Length: 76
Image (cartoon, rainbow, N blue to C red):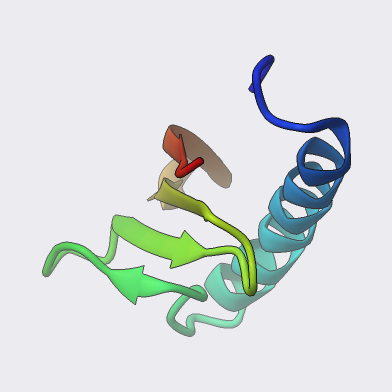
């Protein structure tokens, strides 16, 4: 993220913070988290930041109530 323009870094961080709240709420309510499912287990999801050249994947670890972002891609 060091090479991403500062305004886009801020927007990306805000989206990821919002994702944590939304995904956590979905998991707590036994609903599907936001994004496009990438597996049949309900663990991996992908999303694109609206209007921006940023795509990321995240993993839902329900047992420990955690999400992780293993992949973040900036297309420039």
